[in-house]
Structure formats: C-alpha cells, structure tokens
Length: 207
Image (tube, one colour):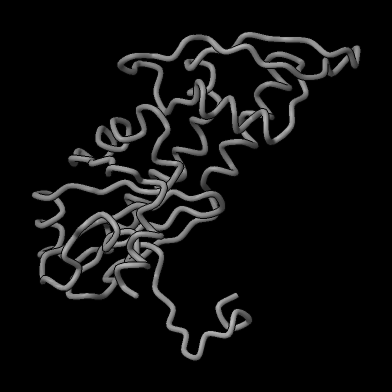
C-alpha cells in the first residue's frame, strides 16, 4: 500500500514493537517488557528489550476466531443462525473471558434465523454463555503466552515478574481477559489505555 501510494522508502516494524512504543514503553532500555497484541486475525506475543524482540510467538487465533465461536455457539445452544456482524456485536455487548466479572453487562437480545424453521427469531444471551463459548479459543492464547514465557531468558523473566504483561489490540477489550491471563500466569496484567490504537500510535511515533 505504501509503495503504491508513492513512498520513496519503506521500513517494516513488528506489530508488537509498534504496540509497545504506542503504549509508552521505553523499548531501547535493557529491561524486558512483555506485550500481547490481540488483533482481528492474529495474536502477537513478544518480549522486547534493547530495541529488539527477544522472544516472539504469533498465532492465528484472535478476534475473528472469537466471532466464529459465538456463531457456532448460537447455532448449537439456541438453534439460531447469525452472521459475523451480529457475532461481533454480541462480543462487544456481552463478550467475556470469565463468568465471574465485575459490573457484568445486561443479557443481550440476539436476532437471527431459526436453524430448523427458517423463521426470524430472537434469543437472549448472557455474558456467562459467551465466556463458555470462548473458553477453548482463549486457552490457545494462554498456551502461546506460556510458550513465549518459557523461551524468555531468565534475566528478562525477572523484569516481566516486576513489570507485568501489557495487553493491547481490540481483543484485549474482552471483559475479564486481563484477570484470566493474570490467574493463568500469576503475573500482573495491564490492559493499556485505548488498546485499539496502540499499534497505529506506535507506528506514528516510530515514523
């Protein structure tokens, strides 16, 4: 896109690096920082120190997979066929990573087509149901995080223990995801301010 727009010189930047810069971390210092960027198509997990990526894991499990899980769940549990746009809306309104969350959202009415009769119908769903629907996919992200931590040098592991993990990307907005990852890793997890635009901000700062 940049080439076709007429840019004379193009340099690529790793997404987690852009995210780290975007949230205000000093990526040039010798201290290790762990950043998890959960986007639409992929989740990028990286440990950054001295301006480089020390440990990196990228998996094709992220927001789009959450939507597919919700579509699948609505079909199996409620005999309701919904599209991707409705699944995205359900995720935003009542999406959750765990059942026990503070300030739970109200149950949400979902419209779609009944699988058997083909008639348009409405079903009410709760955040507990969606947490159940997303459980397996979130477990894959947790496994990737643990894998990245295993491959991190001991000195940087000590830094991550002190500084915690930084969550960015649209997928990080899922209610209770920070708490769930924290319980799994026994580390502090910070959901950054305006996680949706962290990568774009970081790319702009790098530029």
